[in-house]
Length: 178
Image (cartoon, rainbow, N blue to C red):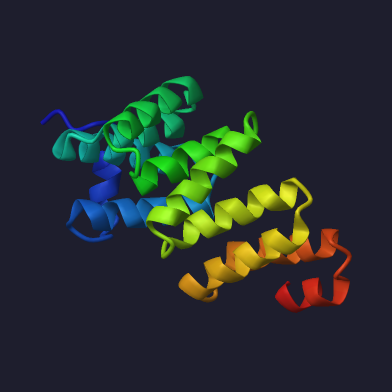
């Protein structure tokens, strides 16, 4: 078999048999262990499998981003959005990649993703994190609240909301989230 590197590990995890179950499992593992190369390799391989099965270039963008090639990832997301300008996952992922170098473009992508699918907690989270870095504290905190409505108890979101509140001078409120 010519399975991409990392898939042997992926299927031994017992995370579930469907590709979507595997993706969800490894996305959570990468969030939990962002410095582990094996987790990223497994997830990138699954993104390639998903792209090949779905004929959706947005998944190639995710694989390129996971591999650390931001230029190729942006090109793949741009192509996915050329085909479907309302593709929320491509808007979310491109917004995340653009946040450091093009915050205005990133914010536009995240706003567009929310206009299409406001139920995705990660979009609210990413927009809140971006607004927090821009020192737009009230808007950032509101976005984190929206993310937590959609994904209650999300530890990373609570920690980010606490940091934003702290930076906004709301120290007591920040400690409540910590």
